[in-house]
Image (cartoon, rainbow, N blue to C red; front, side, top):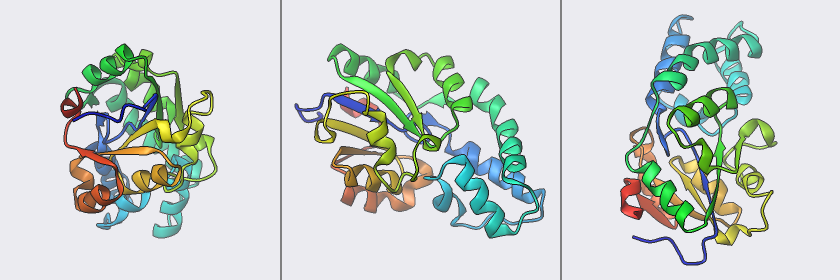
Length: 216
């Protein structure tokens, strides 16, 4: 399986795409809400996984009538996540090999993530792949979440590359939809946490992979 020959740039999501990490956020949400005697609804992860951390905090406070301020909630989430991202979160299979292949083809790369840079940068560094990326953009740097193309356009704004010549790798339906709206070539990436949306992702994305090894 090969990418189109016109591709000059690649934009990667992190959680669920390059990192095997969606399980962590599910556990953090469970622990956080359980401490407040709130049962995690089945649709909660799907509702928040395209949001910035501030938007997620505001949404959670409103939905569950929480007494915490957004800053208090974010601080607690980050404290719970820091150790895992600095020490535990691992790459999915064949990610680094694929990045090396793109580098050898002179294809530039950026990250577009909903994840706080406070977590993203240490995890990228520890896993030995930070050097592949010209920029790391997160949702806090744009006005709208991943259901819109803003973050992907921001990730290539330092280049002269048009979206049609750029590929976006995403594991969630909102991200796939947002990138497609921006005119990008989109590759859907399998993740267990988004398995329920797999058929929809396949119907929207230009290509779907279970593993980056398929592109090496």
